[in-house]
Image 1 (cartoon, one colour):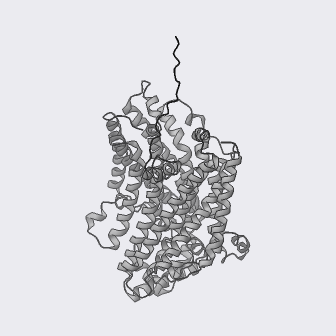
Image 2 (image 1 turned 45 degrees about the vertical axis):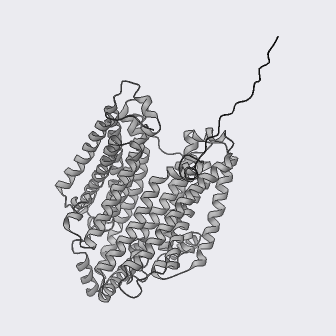
Length: 567
């Protein structure tokens, strides 16, 4: 007698994924991509929204009378009209006597650079970065398909960009409503929306260049080319009036197409946004198709100088950490150094412009900025470069700390700890690699400042030495990240460092403008660093930066010995 067994197929129940996790989380590729971009999204929106509101509050409070606004507008017009270099960098002032016009003239370039750099970095590494790490190989074997992978990841960035547009729109509208004290200060909601859309489209146009090139050049090459096109387009548009020969090339940039659309200054040109949107649609479509049709990771890298052998390999945990971080540090150092070079070289033009000001305007200038001597490169850098420099080096430190944290979040730390390497030693040596990378960035930054000061015929040593304080501040920011990553979890280390940068900047900007108590202003670390570009060093601030950097690393090492390793 025989018995026949029924080999029925048993299928495991398919896990249910909540709608929330599909939109934000691990329930879909779109949700995961949106979740992975949370750090950059927090940084960009906090900086743009916070800076716009704080700057608007300062203008509405400090310059609340018609006479003060007229003097401010006269100073801005005479400075830019007498200095073509300044005019090309920050643009011609339009309706500077209003809150929106002044904020757009003084801080508009900051908004543009933050949004465009974010979009370039995000879209250049969205597919090329994961292809290089090999994570897309596994995804490509699933039923998702390449086109869906590209579309979902791209949709996540478009969603993040939409959030930025909404934040910029609300901040611009609230700025006019809350801080507008004179006629013309109010910004209609349609005008605020115009500005938000313009900022988002300009950023996407810059990022879409990197997206379409990334399947061919990889992350670094595509970001470099897109960054060059973005900076060149911005400068060409700025200098086309002073140098008519540049006009033909400038007409090919989206900055030229939208040059008459300045909604914060009550100048509107909505139709100019249409060709920018069409260009973005074309480039993003080409980028998706390029990813679908090319082999994963089959890129043609741009030839760059190789790193010294001592910085790469497995010669020790410090060298490995430094080798992993130094390419990013070099990129940040070159970028910030070039910015410092341009600013220092502009000091000669600023001195010429000051000599050409009328006596009344010069009196207003000395009343508003009594502590700055713009006839030297150091004084000019202290006024126009240092505050932005603190933001840039701070965000660079946050990104380097995120790289430090990736050892744990990627699972690599578990393999490292299977060797005789102790937890505390990993935390300290990896942190040392980050601090050394910050030192590399600082050296490149200082070199750019020195070259610019030399070209302006000004003192070189003082502003070059002052650049060291920017590096010390970046090290202190990293110290906050080390402490948070060790005590809590490394996945938030970068966010904590970025939050410190944002809070420091906003406190330093809003406390004096709103005449808050002195103890509030003292909470910002940058208030204790003196004026390094003119040689006024604050010893207490320097000591504080060193203590925070080293103490944060030590606290992080202690915390790593007291908790479990997490992914």
